Image 1 (cartoon, rainbow, N blue to C red):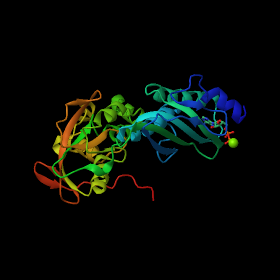
Image 2: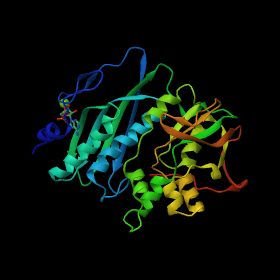
Image 3: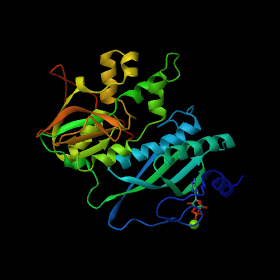
Amino acid sequence: MDEFELIRRYFVRPDDGKGVITGIGDDGAVLRPEPGRELVTVIDTLVEGTHFPSEMSAMDLGYRAVAVNLSDIAAMAARPLWMTLALTMPPRPDEWLDGFASGLFAAARDHDLALVGGDTTSGPCVVVSVQITGDVGAGAALLRSGAQPGDTVYVTGTVGDAAAGLSMMGSPDADEFLARRFLRPQARVQAGLALAGIASACIDVSDGLAGDLGKLLDASGVGADLNLDALPLSDAMAAAFDDDVGRRFAATGGDDYELCFTSSRSVPAEIGGVPVTAIGTVNDGDRLVCRSGGAVVEVDDSGYRHF
Ligand code: ADP
Ligand code: MG
């Protein structure tokens, strides 16, 4: 099967999305933005052996490659519209491509996201780059830089699950819920949209809560106190790990793709179908201080660094 047959077979879908004038098949996609709205564009690359284990199924990989980008779109309070895909891979059987495409389109379907172009190349290992463009009302994008002293810090869902799931992968007592939190992250797109007008700043938790919250604080020029005792842990985490281990996963583990945001407003207990928990307070300092039982706790907030 040549490259063009491969693209036609696995990546062309008949029903194009909103505002797609010309999708896959020409030199470029032609897309029509809605008048008066602003575009938000994000890209993330997954490298075999670095961002995902070689044993990961093609279907989970396809799903994840879209979900991690949707999470960035969610953190901007944007609506996802169009995606492009750059896929590099060594020769793989048809079943692999089949699985990859079905995972990719499964993640896209829930959000009415159209694949409008891409690039397909062979290479020594699997590298997947997905780029997503969404839109937002003019001036309404939710930035990292808006947190103010006195704001409360919140996080959606539960944290630490994906890192805990990854740490147990392949072991006989691996927990299915925790593994799935790593393999099938659920981008908080609805929550992100609902945060417009509520949140003052927002970031998605991809590298670990403490590290990502630290980036939000830096961008806003403020500090915060983070109450480790308040971090929302899943029942599965509480069952599988001692409390202190669970809290360490929650504070530093990556790959949760929850939203961490700040607000001075009254925030409902549930936003966009996910529970929201208050976990700290913004102050006029210049760093993140983590506390447990009132005492300051040193937390490794370095996150994942590539270089
Ligand atoms: P060009 O040589 O002009 O860059 P290509 O031959 O690489 O175009 O691709 C042909 C068409 O298929 C283009 O519209 C491109 O966007 C699309 N395409 C290529 N690879 C993919 C992919 N993995 N997923 C979706 N569309 C793809
Ligand atoms: Mg061309």
